[in-house]
Length: 402
Image (cartoon, rainbow, N blue to C red; front, side):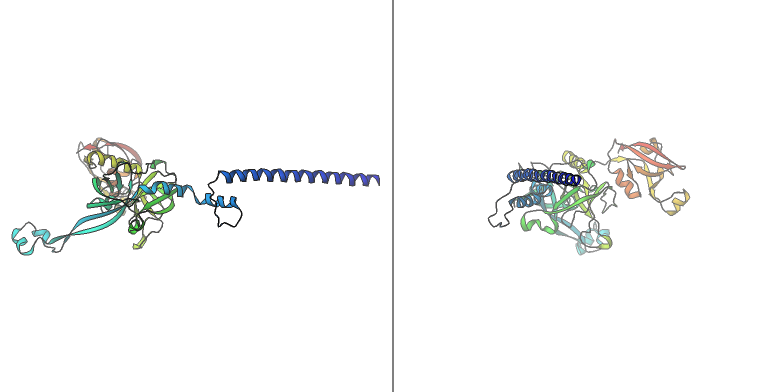
């Protein structure tokens, strides 16, 4: 009996101790949480709303803060440096197919005219201010052929822009407006881009910029880097950034920025399968490191000097060539001729060599080879990967000035 009483007393005492411990623990933690919450509310940017009847100012402040994300803050920072571009260009149309053959014949011109007429064509695009003194970058296909270019700022002001230089091959144009102390977007480093990181595309799709003097914003991620695309109208697009941020007509030339507001690319192309219209989540931007290099050349010389020679003649590989050389695919180009004492000859390249890479640019066919070579200048040394006699070799070729 005494043993039973002892057990009951011991159990009751243990239960009492445990209850006291949990009670103290609960109120201490609750008090600490209240201190933290009070400090958070005090330090937040919560603005009292007299219409708020919830009575929970802390939760409202958290909602307020959650809406002001790094993306919204970046948009607020860079938007003033995004511009709409209105371009007027003169396009020539041939109305008489015979005119091209007899346009120099005065008798023909006397009776039939020159067979061509000029027409003003207006188009829209986007751009990014890159310096406080009014330099603006955009695409060549936006403004490169413009005879009159008007730049619209987010404050509604309009400026006439002049072309400092344009490079159709890389699809990059440098403009200048006569203004000072302008907002601009700092340039980042496109070599440090992370696949999967958030990016923001800003621009003037379909001319919507003119409706509110504000750029349209879309958000996505970096889907891929180093994308080598087929050329479009003799413009070459290598090492492109792919993003799923929506890019539509009029976005061309606009900035692609990372989440901290650095300019990492120039929005340029979209992929639309089977002639589909609009964005399907596959957009491409020219990496800013390439833009920097072209921009500096345009600023210094007004053009990009690609006057060099290789001494190479090449052709794409078809199925018959691949079979003859026992190749697994038709990727690459085959050397068909080499000029004596040329850069290619001095590099030790031979007729029949299969070129598969140039400075880490993968060569798929003749057009990608031309595009890769156009990335370089006279005096540059190229590391050329070739396939010869069942082996891969690396040859160094120095481009010679023409």
